[in-house]
Length: 471
Image (cartoon, rainbow, N blue to C red; front, side, top):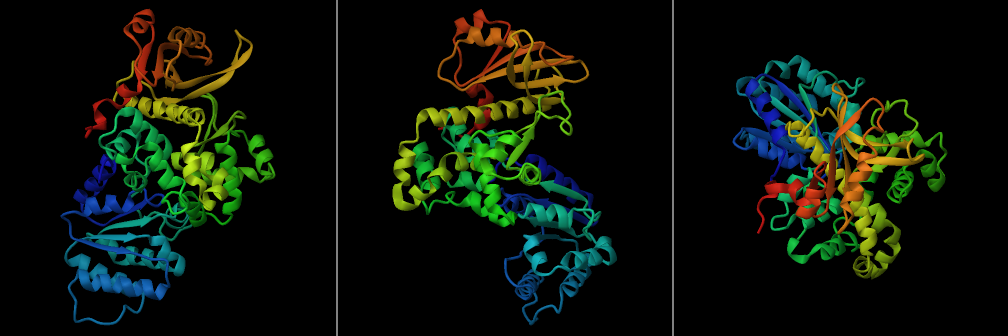
């Protein structure tokens, strides 16, 4: 099922309509939907599609040759191109006659077996391809390789790309569209535990129920997601064991550098480079209180960004040996609701931030917000540490929208609103004129009437009708 990706499809379409030589660098973690996106884009277009494999350079060149022979209907031609340069020269000659789309999928696999391949492609672009109408897409799942060896300043291909796209997991609305028939509460629970990677979502059988899907995908040694996070770490990183320990610490609640260092035993001086790598991969994120400089703030914290990793390191990894011994079904069935709801509460805050970003983009917030984030620090009135779960800021008008996120069955709405009132002036230089309470369920009319100075935003309203395809 192809859902979302409207911005990516629109950009590709604009470049294609522009004509002339184009080289799009498209990358992202495996299973995120790169191949599906390029396949959807290529529909109705004359397209040469080649996927490199983790095999020898000779075999990749031989496979590439066969693809070229099939594409140009050359059944009588035998043998393999003597080199990648000869293959690219042949494509340039044909593209000069009639433009076509050329998708080179998993480019890193081929380039890692032939270190000269980026230089070879660069020469072909500069001397021949640039004067053709070829629409080239270089794809890769190894994000570190694509950013350093293709997009990096020291890469031979630097400056040749006409566009680049890092493909991210789907947002919560598009993820919900991949799970037709579910209400908003169930759609969020799946999103909170599986994230927005399309291939992961495609493995879910909504007819089986939430716990059963967790059991068969996460808590079974043969389950698709049982070893997936570790597989991704092994693909991207040379020291997966150390990163493994860091992620387990963060998922377990250690969010400051000193706390992570204490739990992992990694020297505080060495830790930053590991954290930076995990941040670049999109697995974790570093956050600072709104208003502080991310480069100089000493109050930065690290949070799990990716839901699949978050769930796996929180609930699966600690029981790996038990799952291997066949007790996964029991573990999944007895996973305490309180722990699961506490975890989903954290993911709920992320969904609220997503919602704020979308509303800001569409101009639907009461202020022209240019920044979305959170805040934490000291409250002078109470002389204690406090936080603001989510906020949207108009940096020019110096106004804020602040919100509290309550993923609970019940809560005292008046107490929450009063608490928000006490936080209206905590962010130096700003005043919060708009108070929002994000809730798991809608509140009563009586609550709305008693708290007219706040907006109550339940989960079902954040999904709205856009979840679509409901039974």
